[in-house]
Length: 628
Image (cartoon, rainbow, N blue to C red; front, side, top):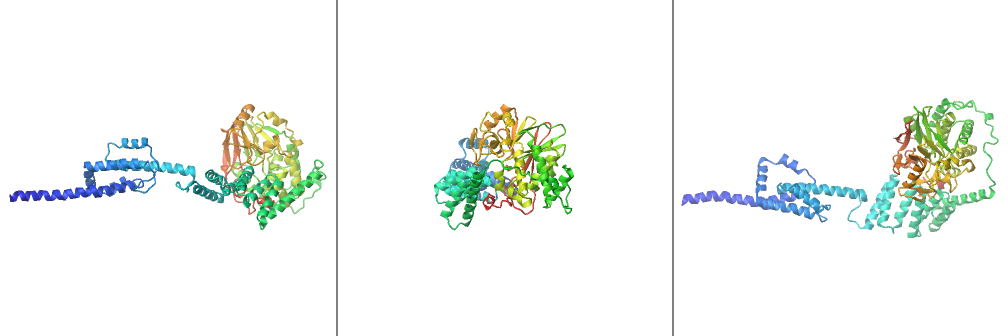
């Protein structure tokens, strides 16, 4: 009996201890471990950590636990619970927001891991859930903007989008700012600040028509909104509607009598209106040419002039010396300026409105977009791509003056090259090679400051003589703005256009459209975002190219953040060659090289440092320098 009792005690004590250990493992340690894994498996590589840190005894114990039916049942139940709970908004234990997982995903997770232990299944399910959640979060951030809280009310989200737009505006990322303001408006279109902010961003992208529209909406929502009136007035002034600008500036002063800036802008606009009325009253026809009475040969160049002399004909030596002088902040003698402008005016006057160019074997033609007085960036382009030569032709697609403060330097360099190689160097007219734009955006003031008023008038006459388009290899039509309001316009209509009868483009007609229109992503035609001209869609471009046997049109006229952009299924190509435009937009510059195979090869370049002279420095009128 004693032996039997001793045997029972010997067996019972270890069994009791084992049972206690089993119960602790099953109901305390394993549930805690499971909860830990549920919470952190989606963030940490627990499989790797476990393999590296668990002792042999721990691994054996884990294997023993996974063999127990009760533990397997609990783990599988927990795994199923995680999948089901994921259909809601939150995991109640982890407190982490999870994205929704559909039934098919949950079923696939269970089927893929059906043969594994419950804990392994739970671990992998958590990883899959984290992956699904991360993908959805990333997509949501891309669609709505990072930093916008998903659980906020529409009004709160709109404010967050507005704040994101303000941040983008502060770093001169105008288009991103516009996108955020647009999202804010979509959520709350009754807040006038959103419209006014987007109007300001549109001003920076020169979308003056859109700026007027948004400022008008802000005024409708808040009739005493001074900033909205101010921004609309600025946009009106930019598109040469000073009478409308006067009305809005007057309203600014009425609402805020102490606003000195608005008072100054109002006075300047009123002065412009009076000047326009005066010129209209005394207009008796075209003025005589600025060249009348100008005897260039009699102008003496002093011995103190330290540059290369120009003796009747342009030379490469003169061009090289002139470019170096300009880099050092020097000018050339006014006699040479007169000679260059008069010679080039005669050359381009005799060219057709549509110049047709074939690229011979062994020759490369470079098409450049707007350079806008950014002389040092033009020098960088020549450094990277090579200077003009008999084997390296160039075509500059308008807008080489205004805004930048070295417009006379660029104009003279381009003209000198045109004079030296008239059949290898080509220039199109842009919308800024016009009198109205030059008076506003600085070129007239720059000519007067560096030379004299006659130089500006001679340039103006030469701009009116420039061709409007070039046809490269009968494949690419190169023009500054874009296409037309009429589908029936053909290349022959451009050829027949007598540009000499219309010095300035006016507000309608083929010339205006060639200089001012822009592409749009939507089909058909629409009102211009600039407030001048119109916009054309991919279907318009396709029909024009098919009707005229073209592969594409190449145009400029607009900033592109990468320097160029292929739109309308590759049939509308924009190239812009003024990087970091006006020192305010973080865009690249670009140019297009075309060989005898007529393949387009795009190249990009960055802005380079320049002397500390701001854009629009010669736009003495504070009204228009404020456009910067």
